[in-house]
Amino acid sequence: MAHEKRLLPPYRASLAGTLLAAREAVMAPIRPLLRDAGVTEQQWRLLRVLADEGACDASRLSEIAMLHAPSVTRILKDLDDRGLIARESDPADGRRSVVKISGAGRMLVRKVAKRTRPILDAYQAAFGQRRLAALQSELIALARVTREVGATSDLPVEEDT
Image 1 (cartoon, rainbow, N blue to C red):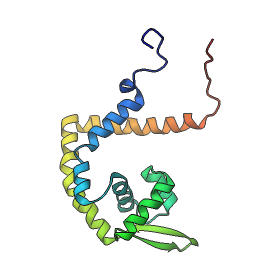
Image 2: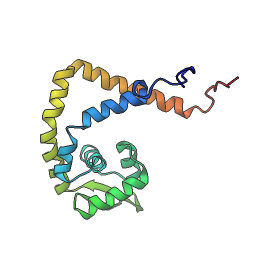
Image 3: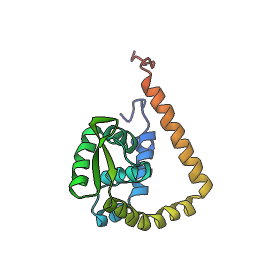
Image 4: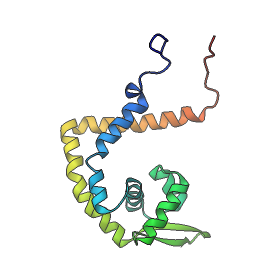
């Protein structure tokens, strides 16, 4: 491949590679705090969403937390068994259930948030409040554009000749 024309940049320089590297750098000091609290990153995401959004059904939870539905189902069972969430029937549709964070779940989120806040504040101080806000705004815009582009099935494909 060294003599061939590259079709893609080296992975570490690719969009996916740089985004993943940034995510890993952000999460590295937070993971031990989650471990100490006895939750995985995915469990934490679901608890955070429930704490932020309030009660919602599993599909909405899956969408907001950016987790696959089967994973959400499995994680919710574990969180329910541990008393960190509660399930109720949807008043509008008795066949569906709605998930909400329990008091114990809310306490866990508060406890971890108190330990996470100094790390997030340090990121902001080191990177700059304006730069961080601009980065987050740009990443939201990038996510929106990539969803739109991904939804377009008639993208041109260059044929090898």
